[in-house]
Image (cartoon, rainbow, N blue to C red; front, side):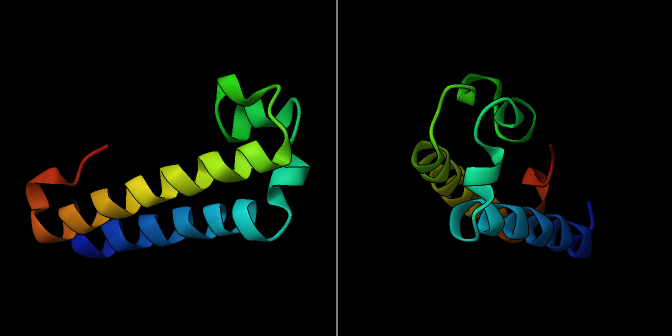
Length: 77
């Protein structure tokens, strides 16, 4: 995968995480929508739990993104 696509995909994912964490997305996603937009096991989570989960997943994705920038062989899904 080319570097520009790798960066673009991470930028879009970061915008999604930013919306969930900081701009009320977690409150909107709460309930049945979390099944489709977060994970299947987030059905009965409240907004704060969804925000914490997304923060942790985004941080793990950031580490994976940096590793993919440094070592192109790791750029896969």
